[in-house]
Image (tube, rainbow, N blue to C red; front, side, top):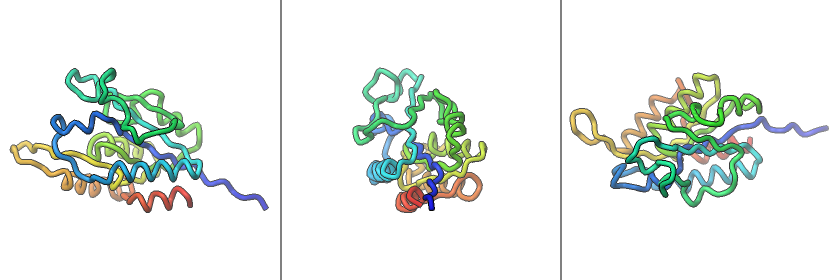
Length: 190
């Protein structure tokens, strides 16, 4: 009796770049365990020979710490190894980068993706929403993302934890299943 091979399940690691360490530019952040959780996910995906995609934001804004040619554009040091695909983008969605993420996933018959990275409510959320609209089964690994405090239109500060909670509520059931790192690792090996 032959063993069935598990269906491919891609891990999309969004914008884990050194420029997000610039607290002067971005402000206070949440989830100090984000990077550790991302490393756990990458290790689990590689151990089970599941595809890993790195996404890099190549900002076109002149004052951005994520601009190509600046130290902030580089991946954070814990992001090691060669991904199965590297997508470079200058907008919020990993599906509007080069090479074409959607085409790459389709060519490999990948229907399930897990999204993690930086920031929760920008590029991670946008990538998850677009993936759902394209028909993928999306798992949003909330504790493997982080975001920053934001100024509201009335001048008050919205705390990063609150923003992450709202993002999770917006995504759950309509665009993604919001899960933890531990749950994602279980799904990767199932």
